Image (tube, rainbow, N blue to C red; front, side, top):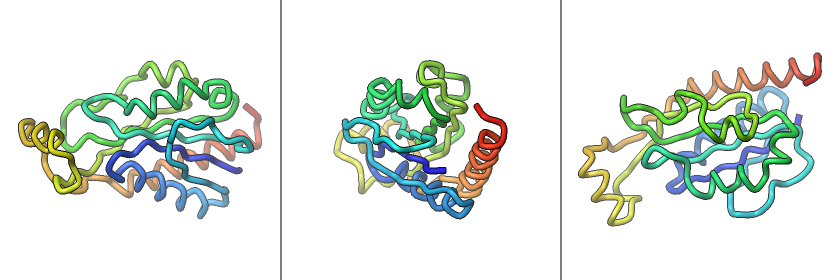
Amino acid sequence: MRILIAVASKHGGTYGIATRLRTELEMRGHDADVVRIDGSRCPDGYGGYVVGSAVSPGRWSRAGRQFVHDNLVDLRSKPLWLFSSGPLDDAPRPGDHPDELCILSGAREHRVFAGRMFRKELGPLERIMTAAAHRPEGDFRDWQEIVRWADHIDEELRHLVTTGP
């Protein structure tokens, strides 16, 4: 199946998750494309969608939220999964419970993945905020968790093909 992975990523960590997800889905026989959310409409010709956004502080980026709102008709018409990237520690994770975007879009699931943060990539205000919040620096993404999610999406897509929506 052809899958669009649309991602809003400020510093590249969320985009890295999207590209790994694309690789894993392609290894399972799907044709997947990763696009950065840039305010344009959702491209046609896809049988499923994955939409991801960086989370800071505690909510999806404006671009990610706007993309879902602007493309509700297309996103609701096909299987859709959402993911968030951003928590760096054991703080409460956005999306541990169904959120407004998940309900609004009819997403099958919303996963939350740990993110990454390197102070050298941040702007001055972001550096001050992360220092004040004592946020750890480093890459906390769990690649095996992302691989397992690709397996899960693949299983759901194969089930839909054999049984219908």
